[in-house]
Length: 622
Image 1 (cartoon, rainbow, N blue to C red):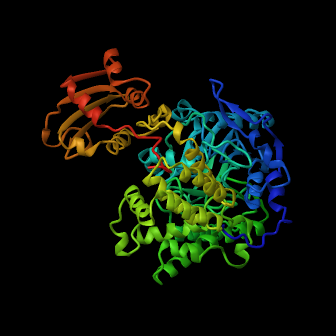
Image 2: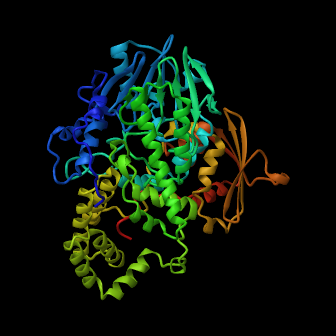
């Protein structure tokens, strides 16, 4: 297990800060949707309030999870409030001259609305004059429809402010690769696990994500440069763009009249991910550290630091210490990985070489690996520079996992012999090697009962020892899915219905680009299709060309005046309803919501070439 250096267990500053400024709590802290389904339940974490940490949880993770369960309305400074403990993220409310500015409206509509209602109960009803998205991850914009609406934004009553390129990255990270990320997120966030000392205790950055209605309203104003200033309802804000850090589109801002720095998700009370385990583009640890240095220089007047997760920090010196330690953590990971990379070490080798931070940094609570770990971040830095290939010719063209597994198991002497070796390794204190051996057996012979049962025990042992919340969830979810493998639905994996509100926020071009990554290229290569789409409200014309196994969306008419095989006329909202599976093309044509001209069979062919993403693909078994 990763070593834990000397930590000051008598340091109660974080506990005091997590409780400071509490005005009111939600009792019970349970939020339901319109149908009565629970979309958030903070009370289920009450077991963390017991003083004694059980043997099944790392004591440091127990401490962090306990801190993260603080919930309610908190006053950060006069006129600045936070809703915490109603989702994985925090919602910040800034009082202006006539209303409020809401920052990062949580993941879903229901919890955001409940948070705003809790604020109103204590501070009075005030109109939302602006919403700020600090970055392009769903837990910071998905609840926007709980605090404002499309009509208010269209009517100029509420502005939506976001960093440059927000919509592009919100789509690419949440739509294009969304199905695969969602499946892996089940493991990372422990979504299928019960909560309790032998199951999920959170994931370091927060306890869980709400499961209500997700929406998105496109920004009305973009922040395009550092130093840009806005006055929103009388509130002065100075922005700092930080692209390619924790998110590809992200920003911090300073409230000079309050001395408050909102640092988005660039600084937390945990080490973050250079590459999140659910999947994403590798982040730039060097740029991340450099932007924190820029924050220190730009906002030296900060007396209070608040973030999109965890709890605030008060006092200029403490703010600067937190910023400095976080900066140094990302810089150390980057610089030392590159140093060892240039000595010829590969990512896994460097991860074994760098297992902890040195000196004072290694003793700081704020850079413990509760969410991102040193091990995975080192490998991510290596991947950013060197890619998946480590330079060894033996690794250039390896067999895929199942074929590898069959050959390893045969070479070891069969499945039973491999399980025996794994048991010996586990009992000898090497669960990592036991997990590797057993994984080969299960990929070679998925029904091997002894291998499955032992792997469950190994995964649980590895999970119980993790200080990192996401690693714990991954191991315990793996164990859970192995235990329930006989009851798994192993079909095509229906993807579930998409959010109409989310789809409505995308441009038509983004909608068609998301179709392109669902096209079954090998089957599509047998066809050449040309479809013209005429939209009303707003008026748009698009042409979709399917050729050479590729879907190419083009705004306007086909090049060269090529005549389409089929023309469809519809409102854009109708397409959103079809894609969200609220209706079908056939029903929409039957009702007159879609009219067609040309060969109707082309639509059936085109639609049949679009693959439905799978949401239940296997991970711990082939």
